[in-house]
Length: 100
Image (cartoon, rainbow, N blue to C red; front, top):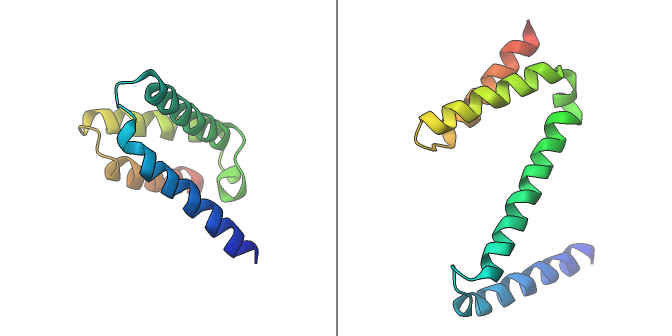
């Protein structure tokens, strides 16, 4: 029952978003505000994962997590904003530094 209820709620919100998306201009202030809220929420979640990790990530030291983050951001910028390379590199670097 809970799965059906959450599925319906998700479907309704996505359906309404698809219906109203044609009427919202990409350059409007409302769209820019939602874009900023989405990015700030993502940044907050990532910051929380780095500073207060849970699970396996909590086994690594804070300086290791921050170091891997900085390296992966640099790789992201220099690889013409490719997401695959930094993602794979972060797993490799975290594995390497945690095994030392």
